Image 1 (cartoon, rainbow, N blue to C red):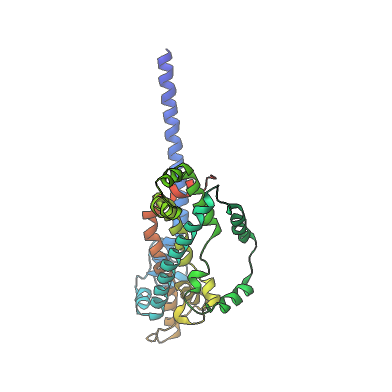
Image 2: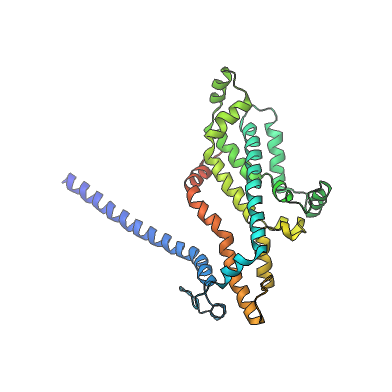
Length: 301
């Protein structure tokens, strides 16, 4: 009798688990559709007739299939110039970010570091109190960084939130005993950092690369303030200009105003796809490390 009851209990529990999984997957699938539909709409709108888009005829399939927007994107040298600028800002800026963040996170993670508390206080202070736009603008001008590509990579050189995540990760996963054992063999802090800390911190480095890389890729405010030369503008500024002006610049072969507006409408959606495609392609390869690193780095050591 007892065995039968136990068997029934396990059976009913398994059935309830299955129902919970079905409900859970159903809700998650619904949320995923709600989140992904705007991106899907942009994709089908970039291949559709602009008149159908303005009339609200686009739902799940493109109407009046054409590739005019993408043709104009590939022909427009201004877009590709800003695209190359964004790639430069992202690669160089992220490299500087990772180097400075890890270099500062390591000593702050060591509890016996004599300047740990004052440096951590100064770093945390900047999260709540900043100099402001005008003093920063004057500072960049005095440093001769205004209207140069270096203002895009040096101004956001470190993020304190990412610093705290990296610091907690190192403190949690790399104990003091490991350095003590290495120091007995004559290992210095620099050698320990380069040969032990960095190889053991690949997970959090991937998280930082994703955080900093996406921030650089989407950056346009600093370019709007500090870049006057159009040849230095990032891709997001070009996209912003197209979205605000609602006209296709540099399209010499478009004659009528109506055709120009149609081309501008397609160009907007096409540029959105082109600008977000690299992040969408790279993220699946970093997702595994991202989930692990952000959970471990968020735990206070």
